[in-house]
Amino acid sequence: MLGLRHYRSTAVDLFQGDITSFVCDLMVNAANEGLVGGGGVDGAIHRVGGPSIAAACLALGHCATGSAVLTEAGLLPAKKIAHAVGPVWRGGGHGEAAALRSVYLSCLTLAVEHQLRHVALPSISTGAFAYPLEAAASIALSSVREFLDAHPSVLRRITFVLFDRPHYQTYQKALFKIFPETDED
Image 1 (cartoon, rainbow, N blue to C red):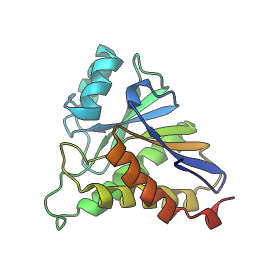
Image 2: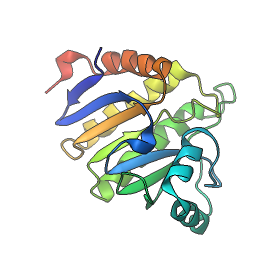
Image 3: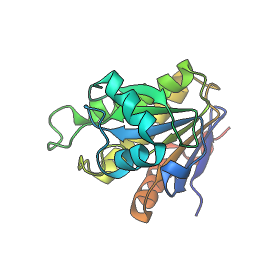
Image 4: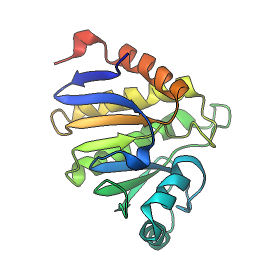
């Protein structure tokens, strides 16, 4: 089954696969505050993107939870990389939802500011940071809808690039709930 909706002149879609091979304008990295390559998406982006990404991150030094910073894309098939720091799950009572919402909005804001019209997003914080998948998918897609309500017709495409089938299926359910067919342009 497909994972695609059109909302306010923007395609919001899902793709199951490896984000490091996904062609886009802005590739989002699920990073850590120190901007050093870790595991999962972060490690893969640093590995595939080459040493220029690590050098750019070292020069930046730090990124606070809930925000994102931009670097060149190195050897990746994107124009830029947004290193986005999502929250570590600590039970839900420590501002995790607000931080996760903020990190998605930060990435989309960077895309608009730098005229990057196709954004590829991973599922932020659901790997090593242990954010519950269903809640994270709902926040991710609600944040996208909130952004598009405030900035219609600015981004051409927002793709969630999801590594495995459970992530894809969970995001698909959230996509269809948050972007019902009646809302399509």
